[in-house]
Image 1 (cartoon, rainbow, N blue to C red):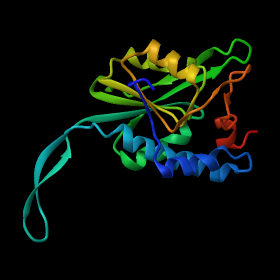
Image 2 (image 1 turned 90 degrees about the horizontal axis):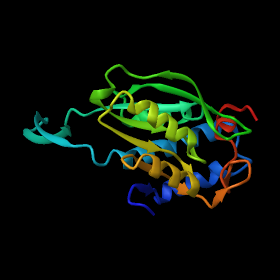
Image 3 (image 1 turned 180 degrees about the vertical axis):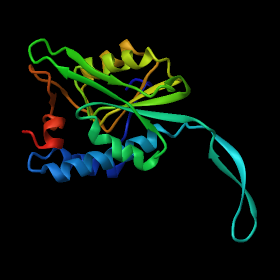
Length: 210
């Protein structure tokens, strides 16, 4: 796999992913699993946050310890499925600001269409985590990242749960400066642009709109 792409093989992630894929998993459990997996993927994606030394007082002595070195994060879920990952990531980084980008896929052309964009005003001072459970053709991710880049953030990472090889190739070629974090890279896309074996439509399963 490309050094730009990080696939999470942690047993907890793989276990949860099995139940996420199961067609018999209901919306309530599906939402919980998406959130939990997002937390675990975020844990890995933030591994390189810089630290600085500080001094605190424990109940016993003064001690030199570490804190994150003033780096600010912004989360940008791609509507609507990306919303399912937000709470899980905020569990780890509750001070992050949250923007939103609305894109839908034209079912005839399979191309993304932008209908909404609202980003934090201080994005140039922030590192951005773009959230979307599925990286299929890559079109939505590529367009969302292009929109975010207009605001000149410090860096961008793309976090998803399941990716197709076609989407990974398209995204890494279009944005070679963006790292991709996912729980699995599946076999391929079908003729309708859905990931196989995948888990179906993530948005429909999160919000119960099947």
